[in-house]
Amino acid sequence: MAARVELPDRLYGGYIFDLDGTLVDSMPTHYRAWRKALAEHGAPPHAFLWPEFTAHGGMAAPDIVRDLYRTYNLHMDAEAVAQYKRECYTRLLQTEQLPAIPEMRELVLTLRGRGIPYAIGTGSIMPGPLETLGSAGMQDWFPIIVTPDDVPPGRGKPAPDIFLRCAELMGVDPHDCVVFEDGEPGLHAAATAGMASVRVGQCPSPPGWER
Image (cartoon, rainbow, N blue to C red; front, side, top):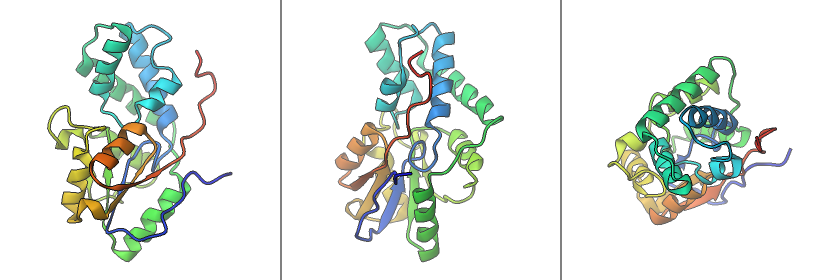
């Protein structure tokens, strides 16, 4: 199986990881949760299929719903849909185990062993990140996890605030940080923050995503 990521040649002062689709192969599970939540809140079947879903990777759930308002002329309560989606995701995790992405898992273990600062900067809010890490067997690995709740409202990805907060908590200059991301919003956020970035290859689309 081809590697999902090419690690940088140089050493950075701080390493920042997106979570879903970067550290853990959780995107298909998130997709199923989104499809159920949107269907039950009246979204049309063609809304938010896999390509559109992956294009929003890393964004906060309420911001995604607000994007869908504009695209499909929908009228839904963004916070209510986002909360129901989170509940659907939690229920799915009760019956399945998420795999860590091997290259990322080994990199984090290396950083831990060498005492190099690292953090997670995610578009998911608590307790979602802890549930995802626990399912992948990586609970308690990350002392720093920054979510949209840790930055001003509306300043999640693609704004740089989440990653800048990671750098602040690590005590590392943003220009000496590298961000690992699978989503365009997060890669844009890294560039705006003045950080280097590494793209993590996306997982294959799940069977039947066209429906």
